[in-house]
Length: 118
Image: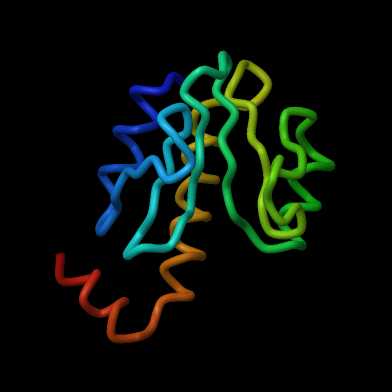
């Protein structure tokens, strides 16, 4: 997965914004103000930080050598996913969607309902 396809996939989700709170070299994707993805724009291949449950994160790290605890993040809840030939695009997209969905579920019910209407 390249940066353009990653950005396009993330921004197609409801309520998503792209921000640069950590400087111009890192893109942060938020849904209703809560982060679900982080990517460094100078990494080749892309290294994407994504949220998941602690149990799922352990499973993913055991299954894929291209998935590790996320750098500078709570490694219990965040993984770094190296988007290269070891992890195919459909898997990366599934993990992005899981991260997005997990964050949406943590939003207040009212915000979740507003998001459904967008």
